[in-house]
Image 1: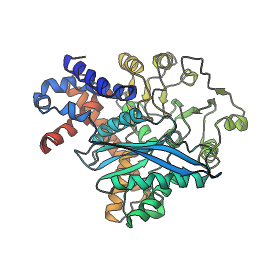
Image 2: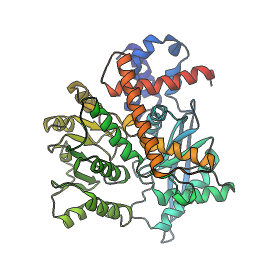
Image 3: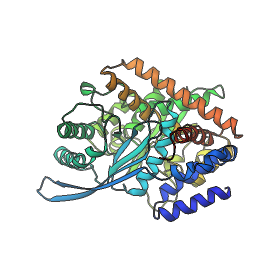
Length: 452
């Protein structure tokens, strides 16, 4: 780590105490771009790095709502508007008990570079609340979403900040949020993405993060003259990203043997084919049940979470490819080594920062095909960008048109990563490639726009 990076990191830690995820995200980017800063002293002079790690705006607010038993509940809401140099702020809303300022700052920081890579004009933001939609009735979720939007509406807009879904925010939540925004502002605009198809949504948006992740993995494999056909794949999670990752792997001839939720994971040696995936989608999207029901129905092994273990057994099975699609830091150094030992040589991240820094170092040192989240899972926000375009035109593209555009964007992201990594001396290193390509576009825009 260069002296400059060490100095910046020391300041980041001092100014943002108790935010380890944010520190981790910033350090990864700064280590990648240190070679860029050496070649471009103008970035140092304009204090681009010092400005890029500081959010343009942080909004925190109270969210009071009434549960079904008449009790008043209070949650905390957030919106982190990180950087708008290349377009309106764009990023998801996360509803989960683990949400706090540090987690959302890490996600917003990652979003800046991810959005930059998509080739679309979008800045980076993130938001959400420590509200847990799990176990809540539809009416409770609606009352929470309406209260949340009662404050958020002041800070967003189709040309200002366009939120989307993330963990805990699916079609139901987007619908309630959009309905309240429309009522408060008395206008029908493309202010949220992930909307229903009948009221401004885009085809392929629900599938986009998972599909894009698999397209990225296929691009990485193509550099070795291979495809996903016949590949054994491990997938974590069972939400939106995991579901459509499994669907696209099946389309391309691979076989998925694992899925998980916060209680445990299933291992299905026969593969999670089309019919079984339909069961998972119904279980998770409508019945909101636990993945253990899959094991009970299909008589396959189920492994409950064991908090005493210092590794995740899901990553300790024979396979060729791994698609972490659950949450941040789900692969530690031991998991990374287990993956390598079990024959995995492709890791494509559907979740945001699912691998710890020690795990990332193992993947890079072993020279496997490792696609970091800001590149590999950018398909979701890319299709959100396409939804914004359709809303602006009052027009809808066909499913095939959107899927083709998504596939093209993922190919462009892969190409940008490969070229940037090679240009700055680390060929094949997708982490450096993604960080460098994403950073340069934002940095150049900030240079053009002056000290703002």
